[in-house]
Structure formats: structure tokens, C-alpha cells
Image 1 (cartoon, rainbow, N blue to C red):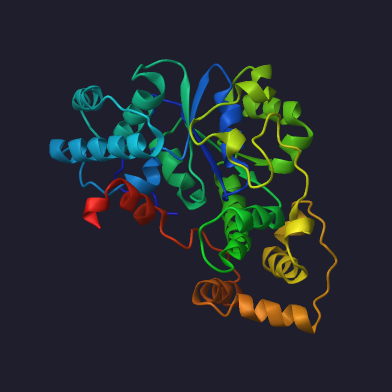
Image 2: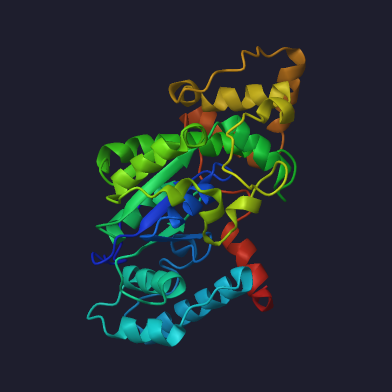
Length: 343
């Protein structure tokens, strides 16, 4: 959790970061926020903290700014068919006495989502698997807020298992990510109690209006029923309704039904529960009650036989800590798609 490191601060805007482990409902939560008339949301588009921050040298240099804006524009065009007005973004940046990464972040988000207007409407960006960077976001935007969502890690694993290109048993890494997220969030809640809200995916499914009202209160907004109208939920970038591992495209709000009993083996469940305790119980999730037999232990041994999960397991065993991150580096993965000539 590095601090600002000279990335600047932009106090004249009030953005919202949506955080969480993959397959936890981050896209849905972003779409719920995007249905509010005073918010405009994107999901996995610019991803400034991962793809831009600190990668382009000083923002005082005009050429560096041009390269950042141009490459970001190409990424969102290729990946999502979205656009930035490069000339207007750069012209607006040049008018700042102190051009920083925070300034460029705000200008690009406003260009993509708000036509570059300095309106009261606030932008929202979903940044999954970057909870360790929450302090950076909050320092860059002193009036910004973060909403972090979590979900039963067994359901996260079940969803990831059926919707990933990663090899082998990589889906079990969701246990280490869940643990890493909760370790970090517990610490951050103490420091940023008024700027960080944590919500439970299952509670949104069970009581969507109550949770939406609570989020609005946290963000200083009046509640709008559009936030629980499935037909009005929207983000730029990923489509929440089709971003599901089970069944057809959502036509109504997610039901929050536990799907892990049907999609995970006994050994997989035991492995996840072992890694995620005591957080699993602390957050109100009941244990399966499975007690490992000889075959279960044999299967668990094979899960950590591959180097990636073995490294995660050793970190947990030796340090008592979870992890943040994907098996495949998302930066390299996306840059290969957008800039194949470089690879």
C-alpha cells in the first residue's frame, strides 16, 4: 500500500472506485451505481491505476502526456469501442498549473463518460483486484470514495472455475485473493472509515433496495429506484447482464443463490474453507462441515503441486497472509491484444 509518490491530488472532483475480487459482483455493483442520475460508471475500461499510473514518466512533460492519452484511447477503443477526445484532454491538462497523474486520470474519465464536461455528475471506475491501491486512489482524490464488494469465496471459485482461460486449478487462487482482500480491507476501514464502504454481494441480492439506499447515504446522494431496476443498470465497458458464469443473460437482479455445492468438489470446498478462515465465519458464511478424509488430503496435495498455487500456499502457511493478483499479468495480457506489434 504505497503512498502517493508524487502522483498529485485533484480535490475538485468526487469519483467513486468500485473494488473487489473477480467474480464477486463488481460489474453488477458498478452498473447499479451507473443507474443513478448523478453517477456515470465504467467497468474495466481505462483502469488507470493498473495501466497508466507511474508508467509514463513525469506528467509535466507534454510528450509523456500525449503518449499516455493516445495509448489509453487506443486501448478503450480496441477493447470496448469507447472514445476519448485526445485534443481536448491534452488542452485541458495544459491549462493546469501543475499537471499530475491525478489530473490526467480525472480528465480522461470525464472525456470518456461525461463528454469532458465539468459537471456535478460523478464518474465511477471498477478496478477489480486492486484493493491494495485504495489508499492511492483516495490520496489522488481527497473527495473520492470507494465501495468494496465481497462474496462467498466458494461461489467466487465456482464462478471462476467455469469462466476463465487460466490453466489447471488456478480458480482456487480465489481463496488467497479473498483472504488478501479481507486482510487489507480490515486495515483500511480503520483509516478511511468515512470514505470506504464494504458491501456483501448476498445482501444486495436479498435486500437490494436497503443496500442501495445505504450506498446512496454513504455517497451523499438521494436514493433513486432506478438502481434496482435491472433494465436501467448500466456501465460503459463490460455488460453486467451477460457477465455471468451460470445460465443466460440476466433479465432481473441476481438471485444470490449459492452455486458452489453443485460446482465444487469436496476437496475444493475444504481447501477454500481452510485458506479463508477465520474470515469466512467472521463474515457470516457457514462452513460446509466437511472433514477431510485421506482422498481429500491427496487431492489438496495435488492442487499445490503446481508452482503458482504452491507459492500462494507457502506464503499463507509461512506468513499467514493472502494475496492480490491474477496468475496471468493483466497488463501484459491486454497490451498484447491492443499493441500486438510490440510483442
